[in-house]
Length: 179
Image (cartoon, rainbow, N blue to C red):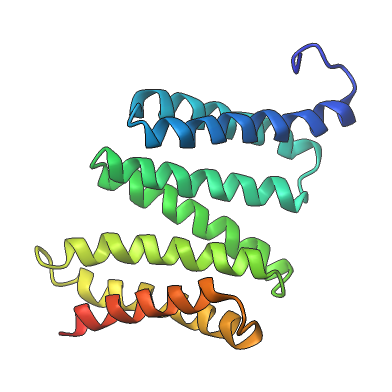
């Protein structure tokens, strides 16, 4: 159906739906531990997003979904013990979210997503720190970034409990590194 759609606006409206369906199916398959299928579904989703972006390069929802896709690929890399894949994908997610926040610093969703990306990269660095001391300070830096972001979000929205829970997790991680 997507390939048969000739109208550029209609196609742009369908591409995110198709991409999100593929990504969501990938998330289900990840829970079922069908990691080869996950890779295929995630790749299809990201491919559709990349195809759609040139049509409307400033579409925030599509750009956010692309960043989320890189985050999901980073988590898949963890499942596959693929350190290089984790680094590549999480760095790309961080880069894209930082670009979006440079355009609109007030977007709370983007701020929170960025904090999750920094946390994931910090988790990698913390895991590597026992074998290579250079990763300890990098992990502390990357845990400190989301801590600042989430503290600000929590201060602005004290009734949002997920911010408080994330602050606690980050404090525990920082404490473990400092011990």
